[in-house]
Image (cartoon, rainbow, N blue to C red; front, top):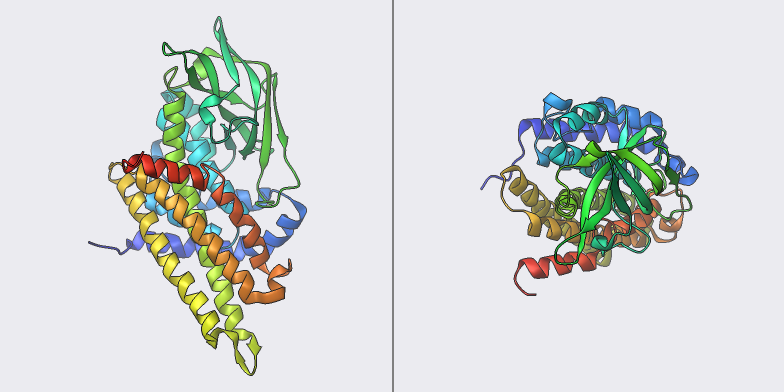
Amino acid sequence: MDFSLSMEQEILRNSVRQFAEAEIKPVAAELDEKEEFSYDTMRKMGELGLFGMFVSEEYGGQGMDYVSYIIATEEIARVDGSHAATVAAGNSLGIGPLYYFGSEEQKRNHLPRLCSGDSLWGFGLTEPNAGSDAGNSRTTAVLDGDEWVINGSKIFITNAATHITSGVTVLARTGTREDGRPELSCILVESGTPGFEAREMHRKMMWRGSNTSELYFDDCRVPRENLLGTRGHGFRQMLSTLDGGRLSIGAMGLGGAQGCYELALKYSREREQFGRPISTFQVNAFKLADMAMEIECARLILYKACWLRDNDEPFGKEAAMAKLYCSEVMYRCANHAVQLHGGYGLMKEYDVERFYRDQKLLEIGEGTSEVQRLVISRLIGAM
């Protein structure tokens, strides 16, 4: 068994880490405070090649493996969750469905600009009354001649309301199956289409520097050929997309946990009480030891899941485990990091305060921790 990274992957990690430290870290706190999406750092992330990393060069991508993409997401999350969310959603939820299920025309029309970072694309799944029960989507799409007529709404959609968002993929009911259950399909809706509106959401606790939006469809008409893949395959496409997205969330949890650990270790070595660094007190040293151990375990399970994907092996169970474990490891690391900072950990001047807030969404987004345990239970044959 070989646990080493390739030279290319090591170079990638170093270059993304340097970029995150130089370009994102100095502005992360201010963007968080202002709830501001940064088009400047977005452009720079595109120039660095952080979008379309797993997409073939034929469509403007980087042609890298999934492990490399996850390493890059991890390194961005080590510094800031908001920017990591932009990268993760941009790749897994925006680019992924188009790349894996789109027609040749759809790929060539949309992927080059998405892979360059010149534009973003959203994935309209969650609704006000359909979160974990995504199959109960109430958004409808009715075929009228050569057009789909879409009505409904979506909520908590990342990257869907920026000035450079070029469109969204929408999960909608397109009919009823023979067993009486709703027929679900994915349909592409470009920004600016009459009847479609994306509204930016504010007053968030976390990821305040990323773009989150509500989507509204009021007799929104799009061409028949905007159907993504096969009619009625939307639920399958959604599940496949979420499997990849779980790896991205896992990377955000892993990177965030690493960032918390490094901040806590640095602070506890410098902070003195009773005449010595607080890191030397056993109760604090054990916190740091637990953080280091859990981060190592999280990295192993996440990278294994990505390796399975890269080798065309089933990875759904491991993806759910990685998403669940990495997100909860970040929770424990963020909690320890704030505790080690004491009162300073509650102040916005210290990055651990932001990490503590950003962590919570990882236990909710792309399948809650409760849903991950349900998925794992079914995959191991317990239910």
